[in-house]
Length: 182
Image 1 (cartoon, rainbow, N blue to C red):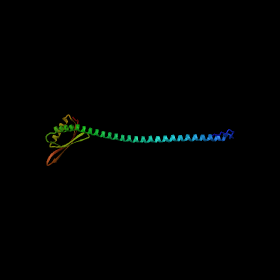
Image 2: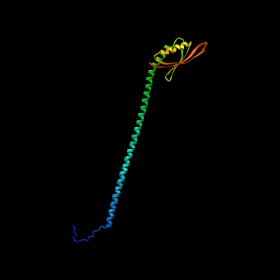
Image 3: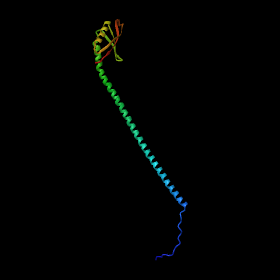
Image 4: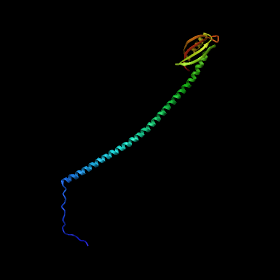
């Protein structure tokens, strides 16, 4: 069975919240909100720092990759330039090959009987010839023949010297000229 008490009971009077308690509650609430706000701001800054650190690391990796690619490109460019230089040298040698044959042909045609060559060299674009002859007139004929060639210019006798070799009197000569080419 259920018993119901219908008699009035003593009620405790409701506690009034005093002003001090209200200020304390309000201060605690403001402090809690402030602490939560500061924690949220710190957390967002920490997340931003972590994100920027990751981005910097990714950028550093990308820079290293690009630096490596740049070095590879420079290496390829240097090798391409070297190959181009070698090709240019080969083409110049091919071009000069026929020119030298033509030069020797012209000098050979100009040599009169009794005139010998001892050296043929090139210096600053000028061809230097040295040789021997039995007479001075043969050297003069050589110079005239060289001057007559359309491929040679500025023929200039530098010196002739009379000498004795193996008991025979000879003339040693040095001359220079410019080869115009083919």
